Length: 139
Image (cartoon, rainbow, N blue to C red; front, top):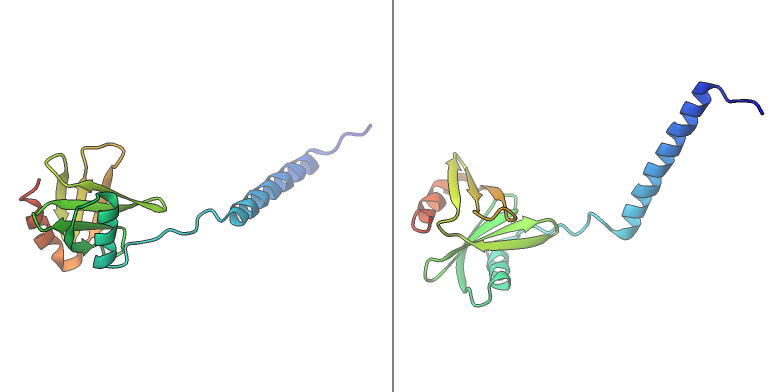
């Protein structure tokens, strides 16, 4: 039995790897993975997400990030809830003394004390300083 030259084996390995990549890409598309990443559309959507996360929250106003990745929702008593995109779902946490906030021009960076929730950077444009000053009552 004759042995194949080294370059032929290299081409076969490369072709097999390429075929495997295309097969995985086809499978991902067929399963519909990577679709359905929703963003926060507007203030009403952010308030609805806050109510969904914490029953009876009663949000009255919300500041939504320019890209729709997060929002800070306030209720009538001044309690604030951070709603953020988390994969293809949303996660929410009450903003309290466990949070750290940093303002950088038009961006507000918030980090929760909870490792699993992590941090989020929100672009509020010219409203960022006003929103950061509201956070001082809570943090």
